[in-house]
Length: 153
Image 1 (tube, helix red, strand yellow):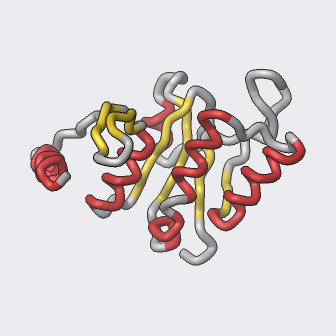
Image 2 (cartoon, helix red, strand yellow; image 1 turned 180 degrees about the vertical axis):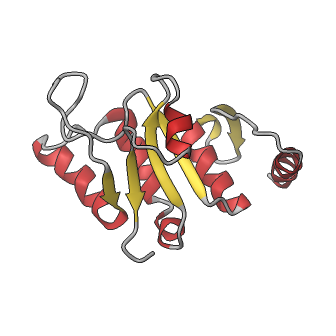
Image 3 (cartoon, one colour; image 1 turned 120 degrees about the vertical axis):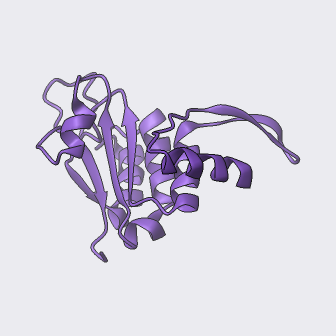
């Protein structure tokens, strides 16, 4: 993993933006498995001391209902990290929020870096299906996204 980190630091020092995704990895205990892009992003954020981490999805963020099923679903613009675990459990228990499948996994991965968020790591979930979403987000313009924040920071 150190050679990967060193290579990425080299790319970054040249002003390059490496694009990484899921890949096959080997583990002595479980053998070969897929390491998802979200887990890789969390690992790299921790190793590289990132100040911002953006997760992408096929929807604009976390909604109060499944936006694919309910046209009136509303995006949740901000979630406090301490509420994240409760939110996913509530969604499971009474279908209050449609936090299942990929989004549930994404939120669990985000919760695993609670310590980094409490130290100031900025985290957001947004869609890359809409043109210029990332650009407008990075420019600080209003757009559809969910931010995960900490009261402690």
